Length: 168
Image: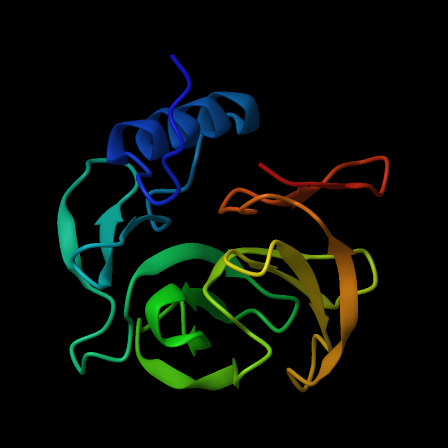
């Protein structure tokens, strides 16, 4: 039986992916964070990556609506896809303080996935438009559509070592 479920990321899946990445990367520094995007809670939860201790919710002001992908950008800031309000928000990963709204607008429709390319630009999965958008990695300015016809591109996008963008 085929099911068409678009917005049901599982925390278990995220934890399994994180665990797989940790094993692949080797030991981690206990100063690192594990971030869990909680779509229905409209937030991102920060935990100590070594002992699992809860640290805090990323946003206390209600800016995040439908938390999806998180990525550290070339500028060292933490980017969060806020799907339900069509925004890409930035936070300081060291203090977990809000920095600014990196990008928003009518062109960014339900952002779910984020990936920084080898060109340092930000590629955004526009879920309901079935597109991947390209934004200037420094300014957030829309640079065009990178790919179309991808049914519900989602969180987990990554550029591979071959330079190709892989989209779930």
